[in-house]
Amino acid sequence: MRTSTVIVSALVVGSAASAYWTPTKPQPWSEEETRLVLSLGLASLPPLPADPSNAVADDPDAAALGKALFFDTRLSANGKVSCGTCHLPERQFQDDLPRAKGVGDTARRTMPIAGTSYSPWLFWDGRKDSQWSQALGPLESAVEHGTDRAHIAHLIEAHYAEQYVALFGPFPTLDRVPDHASPNGLGAALDNWLVLDEAQTEAVNRVFANVGKAIAAYERTVTPQPSRFDAYVDHLAAGEDTSGLLSDQEEDGLRLFVGKGECTKCHNGPLLTDNFFHNTGVAAVPGLPDDVGRSVAVDQVLADPFNCLGPYSDAEPGDCAELKYLGKAGHEMIRAYKPPSLRGVAGRPPYMHAGQIATLGEVLVHYNTAPDAPDGHSELAPLNLNSTELAALEAFLGALDPIAKEDQP
Amino acid sequence: MSNLITRRRLFWSVTVVLLAVGGIAAAKMMQPPPADLDLSLGKPTDQGLYTASVEPGLSPITVGTMHGWVVQISTRDGKPVDHARIAIDGGMPQHGHGLPTEPEVSADLGDGRYQVEGMKFNMPGWWVVNLLVDGPAGPDTVTFNLVL
Image: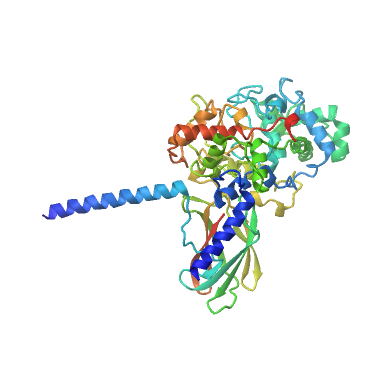
């Protein structure tokens, strides 16, 4: 009885395996590995999730306005900085610098944009819970755009009134709203904000939020592009010959990625990120202010008037499960940061939240040796991979580069 | 003589501890869930005060997707337990971390059924979900295992 069960099981496993495995080449994948590898392919990416907090998220006119705003340097203190200054479209919407430079020097690495529509948390520390709310942060950061919401509202009225009204309805009156005012401002901008009446603050905040919603509509059109790895996964899923789609070294790296390298602990799913927060013992940058990551961002996102549950969100309370049930900050959130998507990672050094590590090879050495965290507790344990294995992992990460448009099938 | 025994004991204790630590480290490296893991979604609570069952609102449960569960609490002879207070937590025993969210009971559905919202698992592997049930018979706990 038992023997027959074993035989039948073996036959079932064998036939399932033959669906994936090609007869021409001995296929190294176990059933569990196959399941994990398939889960990382772009074919597993669900359709763009709705953003109920942004009523114009999928409106092409909003995306067109958002694109214009994204590249408009007037939305800055010195007239020289736009979103596109650091988020360069031809560079995966990042800037190749250790830390972004706006009107001043920032303390964090510019993040790429593709796939962020799928993330419940934005920024390295997740202090924003939507793309539209995220877009507002840099505008008022003293070292990024260095401007303020009243100035933005006046600019919209002066230069984009027609598009704005078509999308969001009548422009609110900004009469007697000073040129510069913001609750996050310094000096006169703060003082000006404090004397505005409720209708004035509501009008400015409403226009400011809608600027974020238009920019987010544009950012939703920035989607992850297929890589050689995705072609490999598609062939594997279809039971077709995968020969030549990845080199032997890249295939070895993939096996380590889903196995001994433990990469899928955090870099999982088709975007190769779990969109949560992890302390991986990355060194602090000397000279920068203390940075404790997610541990302070939880309170920030809960208190943010531009969050999913706030008055400027278009969502119903029932749409805001991520915010409502978010994990509160504990010890493990100290210096915890969001793993970025690894799609295109080989093409955008330097790495980590403040550009601490110059090359991908050094990043892998970091994970292999698992140094202690400067604060909090690192989740890493040493991997003890040898140099051949590290080289294979690095080679595999290169296969996640987007295929140039002209080379796509 | 007794000194020698103590030393021997010490030697073996240290060896056993070192082997155990090595074993734990190896287990963390390879992430194998225990082979005999109880994956049932209905079972008696630890002290036998209730029977608890769970019905995930997502089948199969996928990594990273927020979803709800329905929890059913019954007495041991099968009668529904209403107005129980239920707390939920969980985590990955092999990684030493909890859930990425803080799920809560959002509605008492009646007939001993409770709607839980905020369930999310952000990594593949072995997860546990713990319920603390406080009903007429007193507080009791129960743990469910999932492998994603």
